[in-house]
Image (cartoon, rainbow, N blue to C red; front, side, top):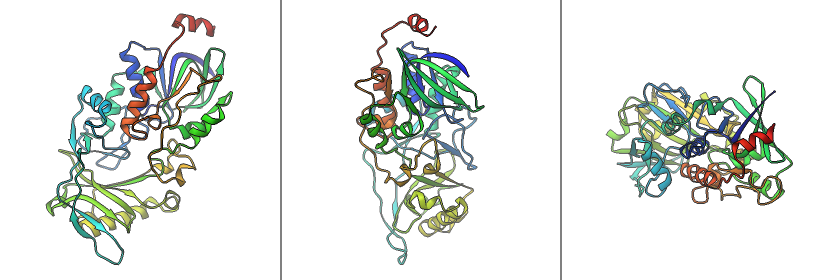
Length: 387
């Protein structure tokens, strides 16, 4: 076991964790560490390339033209202004979700799919060129790479006098203890409550709130089929679809500008049922559905991906697998009394007052968490306390 110190420990290197580190660095605060259990950055922001391989965010990519979002993909800059300003500040290119043309609807297994006039979102749903992973990679490049550690799973938090001891286990099995003044929790509340031990225990009311807060994306799964060309557009179709037959209930165009074409759908099959079906069988049924709705050209994608977030232990708990997938109301982000008061703050998307569960929520919650930090001692005094 080794012992280190950092004034601020950020648990989780998804959007909220990396944005919190970015805000700290902009304020001249460099004494922080970000601990991420996965080997890749991004959390629920994940991408695959045109061959169907998952992209490792945090590693420089030669090309981003052919990348497809396995997690959240859309944002609305006019409505979600803080996220919109961040994307503009980082110089990332955006484009509108393709919605021109008719949508396809399946109402019954006994009836053929029908075309109908498509819906147009107002304001338009926007996407990032290269996928949302570009946001993760760009934020990471703004940080000291030595301060962002992957493969470090936080198992225990112990409140010890005037500091918090954060116990993490590296991928090698080596245990590291971090002595911190403040801990920012950039993981979903339910995941934290179920996987991290707190000594002493969190206040029961707070623990219950975190346990009862649904994790966005956790019950969901996406199927993506990648093609050379968006053949559905030639038929006057937008790529959007709704189905009561399944296995996908909601379908959209996922094509990238100057890249490959793609369709994706949210699987409507419950998570526990999906767990009993192989990916190969599920892909077969998804391809058949695309053929029914968009024609025979859909039968031969050049790559297919299924991302089932319910089977990801870094995202979902057993409780999440039975959830409906709705956005939850934000729980309390910190203790208002007791030993954990003033040293522990939740900053993941679920803690956002305005946009809980959304990408914009991760930015808002992280911003509020960093803004509320108030240090009562100097770094020299903090180091002295630990010795």
